[in-house]
Length: 307
Length: 270
Image 1: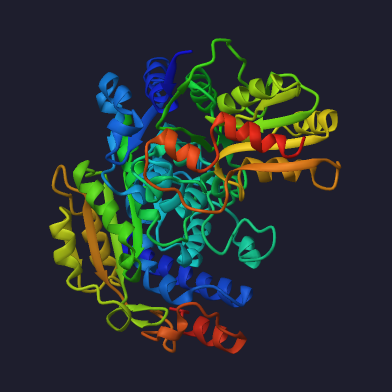
Image 2: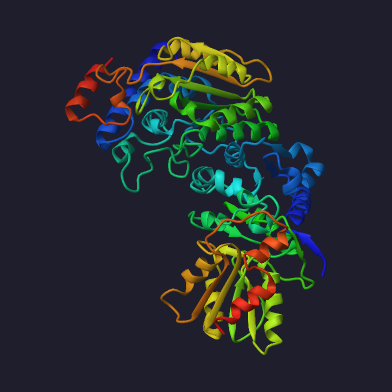
């Protein structure tokens, strides 16, 4: 299976989108080489605006540009875009429902060496709490491309969560519709809802468990908000055991979004796999993921605890 | 509008500010009254706008970065016919088109939702940048408070306005010297604002009396240096026009009671 970072796919998708949609402009905060908006800049230099190391101003300039009829894609690291500029996103983009796309890279602990200060594990929680925000976390490079085009197609604010680490690209071509989860694998013993890089890890974990005779369903919840409540209900009912897997804090992210759907409606065993209310740290990305229990064998062990 | 008409317009807006805040029992009269000439002159003498077509894509844009001074903004928009003055009764009430701070989704003529200080100037910068990119001749105006300039984001926006050579952007600072907790100097000294604006690359005009409508219009009419954004640093009087509010820090965010309303309206008969 080939590997590619979702941030790399983002840069390429932006350049492709720019060629067919002249309303698309891109803002970055001195990280174009890392967020990969550089790919767009190389194709359309006069449509790429560097805000310098000033994320709050970047986000609000994007708001202003959108009121002129443009479709700004705004990128920096998730820590700064969703974290530092949270209130700008909340008040100047989401509150007036402006058509700005916030594509933030280097989310999660898979950032690796840069350490805990740069590993944003709260962005899904922050963005999900904002009324009217669409929150998407693509599972691979192909899905990222589709998510970029879908985000540009829809009217209103979108948060796209992207990763630094190169990750497996699925061979099969899955459909992508905002708000519609993809069932990647059927199963009856436990329903595993995963998002982002954790989808491929969950699929691998499911294979390990299959060898032990366990039947594991894996659902790719690429849209955290609005969440596919119908799909969540269906698989929770069918399997009566639910596990969520995310490269994010277990507070406020996918796990809580799934729990919100089920709470008071269904009785099932439930487990959230993710970063357990702690900060990340430096290390090689794969070592850091292992430190926080987010590799396939660890996820398999964790799932087994409720089987 | 000639000078006499502009003066009358400002008096009407001041009466609107008093009535709106008194009706609501809350709101921000002090900074609304200090900014009245600045905002009225922008709307009445500079902007290409059509109250009957508030979303005209070719209109000029205004952003009230000091969003709490919404009563002045609403007064001007209603006087110009963007909506009926009867709406003043609903200011700050449930389901009103006149929110406590400007809301572009609710109020005809409002180009940006503001109120969280420091953000409006960045939005205006983005509008000016977008207009340049699109090749439009749109002009963008924004009014900031002096206390607002304590927000670091303001200086991020100023840097960007200069970097992108936004000579279609006019930034006006309502320098009334007071903020919620006291004078600017008591709370957080702003230093030499005019020098700072110049250092940030602005074509800078300092106005000794920002409540002198003729001087304000002249400053707005002065062409900027090509490639440079324009800044007008206007020294104003907080609470201007209402004797008991003038230069009183306590009238930043407090509404007049009925007796105070009547006194203010009497003083504002002109």
